[in-house]
Amino acid sequence: MPSKFPEVQGGGSLIIAWQVQQKNVLVVGGGEVAAGRILHALNADAKVTVVCPASGLNDEVAFRVSQSQVTHIDRNFEPADLEGADMVLCAIDDPEASTSVWKLCKERRIPANIADVPPECDFYFGSVHRDGPLQVMVSTNGNGPKLASIVRKKIADTLPDNMGAAIENVGKLRKKLRDVAPSPQEGPKRMKWMSGVCESWRLEDLVHMNERDMAGLLTHYESGRIPTLGEVRTSLLALP
Image 1 (cartoon, rainbow, N blue to C red):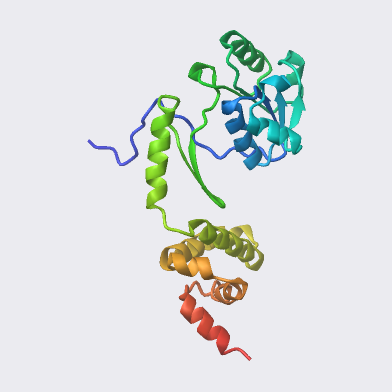
Image 2 (cartoon, rainbow, N blue to C red):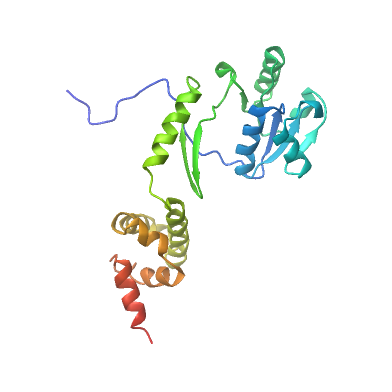
């Protein structure tokens, strides 16, 4: 008898959006791979510390050090560097030293990623498409980073222009809706109404929706009706 529930597909990763804002991320190494890891962490508003001799910093990492975007410790890694770290990203060309970092992180229960060594990773970095608040990540679970990049580019090519701007406006509308209907009991209705707006409005309308449009649209929340952008603006013109 066929099941009505989704089939379990083992062997995957738990894909989540990890919030590291103002968290302490330690990056061991200063080469090209480390540069990419650092950028990911900075994009997530983390506080980044890089431990690596100055002679080992590539141009990008050296630039971020010079601009005070990261804190730099000018020497090789020492166990004491783990003090206060919320996450460790190791990207050095020394397998023995990398494994040592991994074991220390395991002892201290600090989530870590050891570049190019999948068995020594609590999490993987995927290939990411970014458009404002929109982030689309493709992961191959450590099997094929280049293939992840190819798949990510194909997905990005199918996305409409201005998707990020539309998402930003939807986020603003959601916040305003919570002010209009803050009660937890309103939660299901808020979700249903917002879903209706996203499904019935064109992407172009969401992109061009302004603060006045949002205010006009929200007057229809209580009734549950979802007018078009044209209807919202027509009703606003009729106001004194």
